[in-house]
Image 1 (spheres, protein in one colour):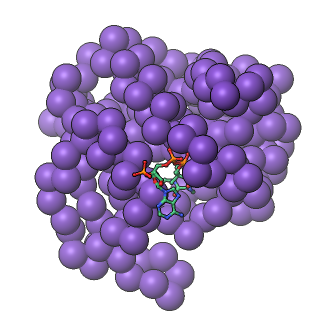
Image 2: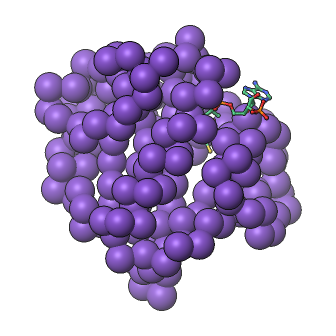
Length: 166
Ligand SMILES: CC(C)(COP(=O)(O)OP(=O)(O)OC[C@H]1O[C@@H](n2cnc3c(N)ncnc32)[C@H](O)[C@@H]1OP(=O)(O)O)[C@@H](O)C(=O)NCCC(=O)NCCS
């Protein structure tokens, strides 16, 4: 399978909305609107195009030419400005094919090349084993665990802090 990252364009709003409406949200932050409308997609794609290469890098994940997911590294601010936070998700039917492991490898290369950062941080809810494996296979180290840091619906999770240095 050919896995490529591509810059988002405004033409991708339907794909973005479809993926966001079908993605498994158990381990995602509440920042992602639900339901996810075409207007939400327009806002996000517009933000990504304005900030691309300056405040972050934003890519669609393509598997054999089809958009199957979203991945980004966004710079933090203030004293954390040399740190980029990675985020990603994949349409459920594309899970467990090694797609995100390869996508993370590619976005880390892009982020370290294009952004003025010295590390990338991944914040993963403790039970999200697949996401933790994706980062570990890409050389991220578990740097610490914030106990009971996440409240999602009725559940309380520990938060795993992963880091990869430039
Ligand atoms: C987490 C997610 C990104 C993983 O992507 P993926 O492409 O399925 O992952 P990969 O196929 O590259 O597999 C990575 C590893 O996780 C393992 N894995 C995959 N699905 C798993 C599951 N449900 N439970 C346990 N391990 C799993 C794989 O076996 C592989 O490990 P291995 O090489 O040691 O065998 C994807 O499931 C997803 O988008 N989930 C919903 C959104 C989300 O949680 N995003 C991350 C927020 S931090």
